[in-house]
Length: 256
Image (cartoon, rainbow, N blue to C red; front, side):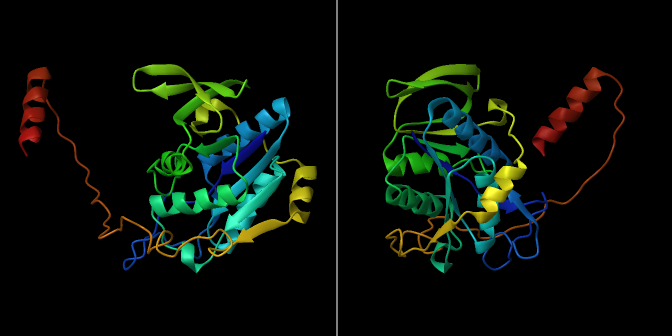
């Protein structure tokens, strides 16, 4: 079974600094970590490999330092790692990112299952996974909380919805985005860390995956940040006497 796990390196802090000109996240001088949601996707891939056998490829797009994030993926059980890196990929929105990842997965020969975290903590859009599935032309399910079984060319799963949980069955190949309820990620073992340190992280640029400059990076993005601003911090307290006073205050706030 061929599994591809898409992972991302994100800033370790919740305080994001944005470039006032490009509107992109400033990553220089900021400690980075594996996107927390992607850790759950990676763990689920390793568990599936332990049950069913196969191969896991960890795939990422980012700056050269993202190799360290991929080495963590290797340390916990991924078999190989691929990084898309180069100026042509810079400044990508979610669509341009999905296009680049789709090209890389095709270069890898496709996958039986693509796993992604629900979203990245530096963007919170939850768009890349579903976009990637559409570009690959495969079915997908979002917010998966359990993978029950993979057999007979199908994956049976449970996913979170607005009114509870839904049981679904998808044909393979397919793409799943997972939530943190799906498992508890393991820590890398000493043996895993040593193996990852010796392993090669394949680095591909736009030419390697056959990407057109018009489809990736900032040139291939269909959205852009026009302006950013921090919300003003406001604090205050009003003492209200009874439920009727509360309702009046809420109605007045509604009209503002």
